[in-house]
Length: 637
Ligand code: AMP
Image 1 (tube, rainbow, N blue to C red):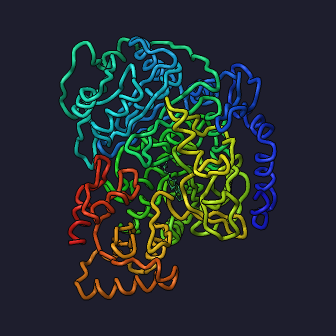
Image 2 (cartoon, rainbow, N blue to C red; image 1 turned 90 degrees about the vertical axis):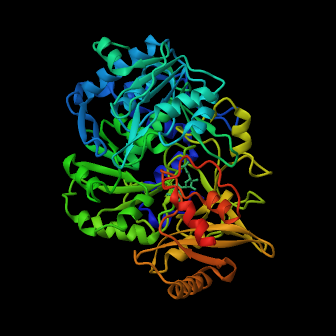
């Protein structure tokens, strides 16, 4: 497997990768120098209880120290946190020194509420600086943060409170979306009421957006405490590398969210290495990830990664097209962003806007645009690279891994990319495509399950919070014959060692006994020149078991009449026929204006499928546009 990418590498990537797989302990011992250790580790890796992997055993360090304190001498007066909000029209820059003080104040607040090492703090906040302070404050004193995306409503929030049992919840009166305040506090109060576990304290940032009720004795005002603790000095608590830094809940196939649990030392090293080898991060420059702190990208590449690398990080509260589609590029220009990280879905949104916005601003500081989170289709990738004239770097990973599994590691070597492929395995990840029955490696270009041989490299999940058994059962038990980490993604590896991701194994559909990835069909349909975006789901069928049904958004905003729709549908089916075979041809192609997605841009395929089959679409609290499902319903009718 290690041999596979040789044709495309001049040897630099290949040598680094080979070493990381053949001698992980040596490789990761060297990478450990990228961060500060208060006490050196005794053992690089303890993998005596597979599939659990303890990295840097005996070592002591601290994420907050590495992200903030460590840079004070050199970068104290340089920007660390750049807050830009087009929602409340505010911009505020914190230097490393100012950030250091704000974090100590927040840490003092938590300590005042009795928070100690190992206690959980739940953070339910919009994209405001106090959210960053709270996260780093937890890291500073060894409290375990659990950030819950602000778009989640009380039901999802309650289940996370119940599971994490936080001593304190940090929240705000409201978020804001498209200029409209979205109240958080009533949802939080309701969630606490629903939960059998009750937190002792709630720390409230009052943005003055929405009035809210205060529970006496439980709720505290952030601004008042900040004033009181303005000069607080809170020393770093040195933590074992294997202590827990945070829990981040992610949904799986069951209704109960899984708490992805991450360590301290391994995570810090993995992020530092990724900043260097993948993201080409340079000290003193600016990193801008357009995600949200509620997602893993927000944890790794809004907060910890850039700061550990000594970069300023942009925290942007707002939409990509408001006040207009030039906003990201204006931020790039104004703050000399060198690395931009976003998701394909956001680029597809831009694709529908006036392209003039993309050439309006000076992008000379920008080295590359990184895209992750979902498959990057060739058309979108081509379009954006043409429009901004910068390299586009697809990278593939998961909440569970915390940092990229597949990418072109441009910080190592300028290897050519391939359209439609996130690239080759990242150092440390022994990635394979396995036959789902035999667990044997697939042949070149043969479809199988993307799997990672243990031990996972540093930075990946330690376990499922409070449930080791679930960790082993969910991720390491897909194959009967041996223990391998399953990504639950279908993929292929080509003759040059490049991987292509074909969609989740759990979104698989079965048409007349043939297994099909909905993603493959979507890719095929997307290649039709009229199609901007498409979702394919498997819908129950009495004869075939399931049939594929497609919902497509057309590039042209003009409505299509019935005859045009019929013609287009036939054309699209023909495209699929010719590319994948008639077996993959969707039974119907419907045209809609919007697709149901989460606010992080994930297609809600299962909800679409449920609507198509006349079932309840389930918890819709994260849906971006609630009218989207109605469109699916109407289309089917
Ligand atoms: P999440 O944990 O929400 O980040 O979702 C992880 C899943 O998103 C992966 O298992 C993939 O199915 C998908 N994914 C993430 N990045 C990519 C990518 N670059 N290309 C294709 N699929 C991706």
